[in-house]
Length: 241
Image 1 (tube, helix red, strand yellow):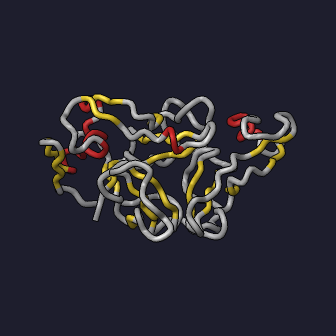
Image 2: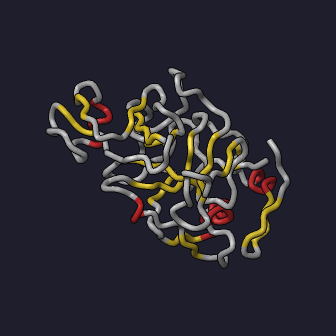
């Protein structure tokens, strides 16, 4: 783990070492799948990832200043025990197949008795009869060779915070929950947040803007019905090489 590099945005100069002293964990490892692609509202991609924003077939990020980061390390798709994930969380994987324990978001019908916890989360909002069957959301991949994969098993989301591996601050979780975003994250709907309540998040997301209230990205127009982009507000500060 490396400390001591400094960041300057909007006249606010803060060192990563300072974040460590403040009790904010700084991470250099991204626990996920190899070739997983995540959306970040940060000025850089974390270490052990590659910035693929604008690469052939990938295209630009939905909002200026955001970026797509492809994982260079992590779990293999065939691993039975993968990274901690929320039940129903949607991951983008650059592969011909989804990881073990995931299903592609192709609108398929599932048996509610075989997937009771997932059924309790999303019910019949995406289809099915709402009793014996329910459907997964249908989200076509917009990039060749990339799959949108939904976790059939995982941690039941809580509004209180994380119960597994803490994700990166400034990353986006994609979830199909009607109740909103899991604890430790907030809906990326363009709202304004006070910098003094979370200085680390301000440096990552609000950098370059005057210190005070700053807007977070607004991804509502890019989210399909009942799909939410949730900005991680309480997480590991992403390290970089």
